[in-house]
Length: 71
Image (cartoon, rainbow, N blue to C red; front, side):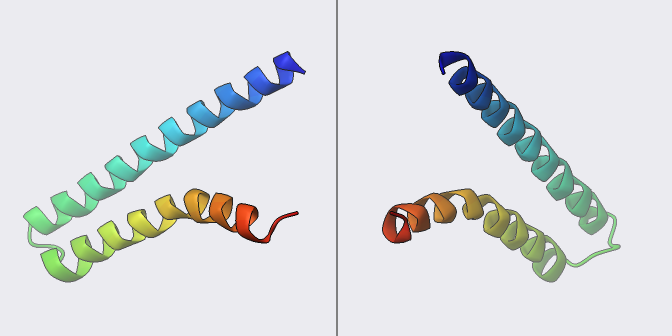
């Protein structure tokens, strides 16, 4: 049981690290597009920040919903 718990914990840390790196890369990409006047700061970069925040909040909201509505 300990080996399984350790494996899940390691996977979770790895998964969230990769997702965080990808989110930063996405925001940098949109920021570079805005900096070169190929995108709008308010609509495109603001929208990218909102998307990253929404996707990042899903695990927290899922855990909260599990405690509220779970058994």
